[in-house]
Amino acid sequence: MRGMLSPSVMCADLLHLAEEIENLDRLGVEFLHIDFMDNKFVPNITFDTNMVRSFKKPMKNIRRDIHIMAFEPQQFFDAMEIGENDMVSVHLEACEDAHRVLKDIKDRGASPCLAISPDTPVEAVVEYLDEVYAILLMTVYPGFAGQPMAPGSMDKLSALRKLIDESGKNVLIEVDGHVSWNHCGEMRSRGADIFVAGSSSVYGKSYPLEEAVNKFYSLVQ
Ligand code: DX5
Ligand code: ZN
Image (tube, rainbow, N blue to C red; front, side):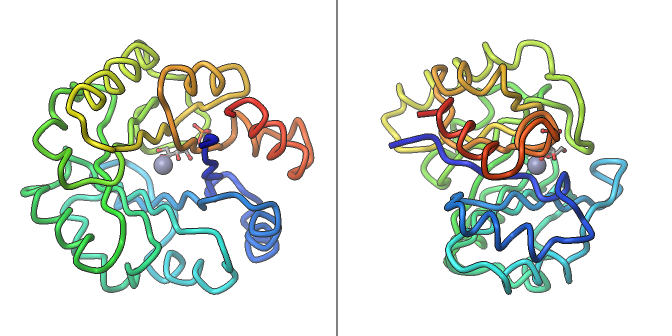
């Protein structure tokens, strides 16, 4: 299975989002990465729940990959209309009871994912491996696009892949943050499956969108 692409819409041309999404749909990318921030868990705000809900309209084949950087994320699930086909990541560091939140996502027919920030050890996800579709490994500190990779992220990715493989569970790894042209190939070889492509690659202005998407897929075969 080839690596899957999840372009980060907060890095896209925010004045032409419907067109951006239609282009990505046409190019066959698997996901659209939608960052939701509450200005408490991270000191930033991106899209509100109305916008997160509205992204569904222009999508034919792309799945919403909703990355919720907010405390007690389940409070937003109804407003976002979380449902079939969605992949939803919640932060272990932001949930009082992550088991209950992950079950709520699953009960809505969506794919539950657990996100961990750079300072959270990979061992923290072991007790959740039976309940998740993927682990979202933050390779930058959450909250802003355009940041450098957090130190030790590559080794942490390998350690996470090893831990999942040793568990025997079929859990994917999504990497998010400075997934650059130079890094994505090595991330693939270290066990990443889904790639959040933002300002350091697909939205980095070096290539037109179609060329950038095709280049990315060639690097993460
Ligand atoms: C940051 C977000 C990322 C960000 C990635 O908190 O989770 O999705 O948009 O953007 P780059 O690729 O610029 O790090
Ligand atoms: Zn993200």
